[in-house]
Image (cartoon, rainbow, N blue to C red; front, top):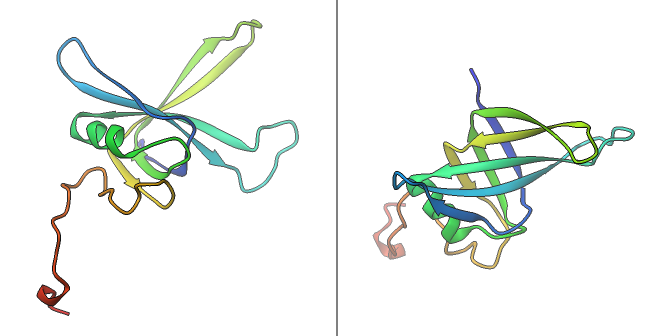
Length: 128
């Protein structure tokens, strides 16, 4: 099973576009801090995220640089040649679930990315 769960902060504002066949996609990068420092290695790992359809629309609407998120989905590894000639790897997660966590100016208004916007509920109507 290929399923990755990460929690981290968005490194810059999400970017989105519609594909030629009309599908909406939102792309952003999440930095995940490492618990222990490893010599000669960065203190964070960076994951590119692709959120499609309604999930992508909610991510574009509510996410911004610095916002903490949890992302779940399959991951793929792509290798490429850097300008200095070295081989680098890039990790991309195809988001199946994105949960908006603390932080950000609009965190109080943001619903979970994969759920509809909640209606106002009067506390007198709650059963508990």
